[in-house]
Length: 130
Image (tube, rainbow, N blue to C red):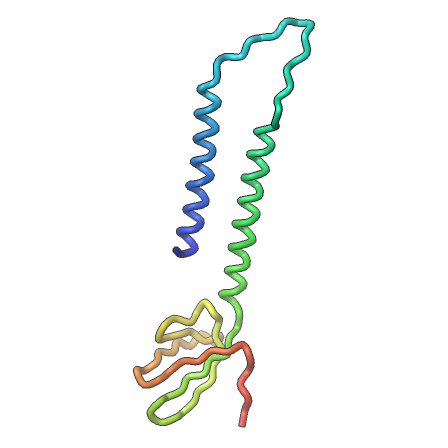
């Protein structure tokens, strides 16, 4: 499930919760106006505040998750491309989110496509120069 699917699932859950709360509010019998001298009845739980708190918590968690996913996609990795036939090694730097199965885009904006005989290795440790 991709990022868009998770966001869509969160929106659907929030909309469903709001729909349930709205139908429960409409199903209640009409309120009876108490006599002038009596004190108003107290509700056991502040449902409105509780629901608002849950929604704010969900939005906060979703925002944190989106931010952490964005940060992870923008981690710089060191990419090593090795040609299995000749043994030639090339070094590049690329963002984690820009690396696909057989191609990647370097931090300089160069698109690199791998041949069938090449393999891609990634690392967070810079390569040693001989």
